[in-house]
Image (tube, rainbow over all chains, first blue to last red; front, top):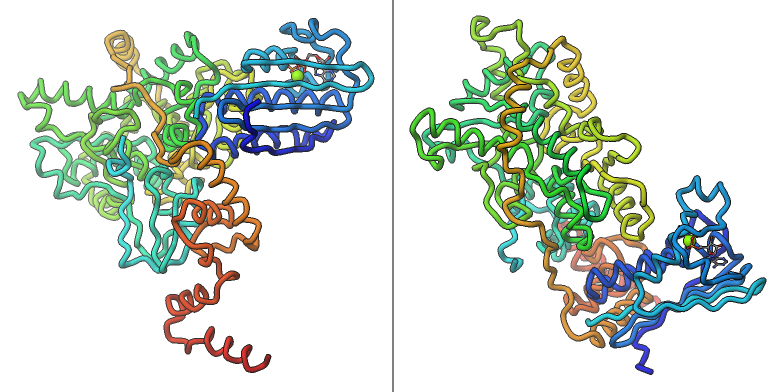
Length: 143
Length: 449
Ligand SMILES: Nc1ncnc2c1ncn2[C@@H]1O[C@H](COP(=O)(O)OP(=O)(O)OP(=O)(O)O)[C@@H](O)[C@H]1O
Ligand SMILES: [Mg+2]
């Protein structure tokens, strides 16, 4: 495995909608500062934002680990939450178990996981019901 | 585009600069530094918002607009007033009076942009309706917004509305018309925008897309204001048909006003945004994919829209009320107006002179490992800085200073808490008549030890 040039760890608090999205903003600032191509940054930001939202919406707490190698950006999002019983199904566009009040906030369209997958070069979900979920995403860059 | 070619809408005269740092503190892209008591800016990051001009009290920053004498190179001079001009004078002065005063001022004609603005409304509506790319579309009428996107949101450049602004359409139309009518070459006709803000001036000097503006320059409302007031008082009653307020269509007055552009679009899917800080928040949300259902964002950097431009004279609330007053007068749109819009709309070319592109910034020097090191270095410098964001180092925040240090632009010791030399320098610059306190104090400290 290639050397990790940079690593940042972030905490995400479940159900704290006030702060939701802040980690993605920080990651964006880091990548901009590094002069990473803006199209790549946008993909990373979409993935981290959707992941952050899912932790906020479904879990009690979680972490986002950002790692940079000479060719890739790796995001690992782990949470302590209910887990996903059927990952295939969760990955379908439009599938959502989000309650109505989330939908009123403009979330819960079942587009998060599909968008994350679409914006990643490699995407993997590990989940144990009643324990938690870990999402790995790799986005290649050529900076 | 190499940065030396980047023109900006203001002129700085460092001999006048008092080094007060007001401009540095308000600059939204942190483009200004005040070292050695003088402000300077990083052209790459300037988006021509003009906040620096608004707060500068020393006169060191002024708008680049045209000198009246410059206009003499044209055989025929046509004023193209921004609708906001009509909000600046006493209520009894209708647009007809104001246009008359512009003629007295020395213009040969005043061009009424009602038709171009109405065509702009239609083109906008068609563009939003038929759009195949990513939503939301972002209005491109305010040049600051275009530059903000080019500099800070490069991936959203293709969401900027790719249609020509009404003022450009107007310039093209008037040159066509008067060159035909008067047998002049188009270069002999000057199309001069009467501008509410310095940003529109830069959009004429240097359009955000590569290409040349059809307008020949701009004059700020504040530059002609006093003379216009005098001329308005001296107008002969017989000069003006007081039965007419003087505009082909008052709908033009809505264009630069918040919600003026979305009024023809499906409301639920459009937002009208005002103020740079708010707009930046929404753009950040778009980047994250948080805004999903919105098709169009009408953006005005100035709260209150163009009547609040930085070259306006009157307070924006009074100005707005004057526009409302004109709008409230009975002024049915005429059949000629509608027919003319119908006739010209299908013939008009709304495409921009060139596609909009992100601005190339020169901040990605070195390979990735060097850039990571630089960022880590900046983090370490920041840890040593006080976090007060006092600005006395000459950078707008401790973070900006840390980045400058990591880029080898300035030494960490520019921070007053890290170095007494910086304090002494600032005392010399800002309190030149005081005895050298820093030295005395450090002497005392030394002897007290
Ligand atoms: N971290 C998680 N823990 C538990 N369940 C999750 C988690 N992430 C996703 N899910 C489940 O997968 C479903 C689909 O997730 P996805 O992010 O695609 O859509 P959504 O969150 O429901 O809506 P949107 O992301 O469009 O706001 C969710 O409704 C939820 O049931
Ligand atoms: Mg989701």
